[in-house]
Length: 152
Image (cartoon, rainbow, N blue to C red):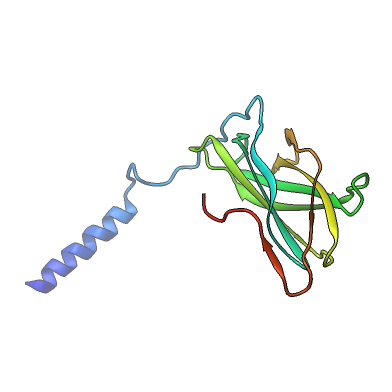
């Protein structure tokens, strides 16, 4: 009796996996690109060690393709921010805001860096928002800075 029930349960489960159902994931087209994107919070230093930093900011959801990039332009001279780092991320269509983070590697200890941030779609087109220039100083070797709240 138990073998018959087990076979029926397995057959039923296999059949439900093979048949189309309304719960099957669908690929949706991109949402419309926002007409105007603005910063809500930041950009600010979230974390820093002697050799890396993480910059974080929140903006209104830029829309467009789900695949996006957080981008930072930085350097040690505020008039020459010619280094760039970017981090891939995915937009959440159901949220009106998007949190961006960029990890910047290869930094020097106890050095002041200047930066500005932006975001762009996978196609390389800017979301039309650019921050003012900000700055932070990396800590001494063996130290770290946690400057932005981890939980919101």
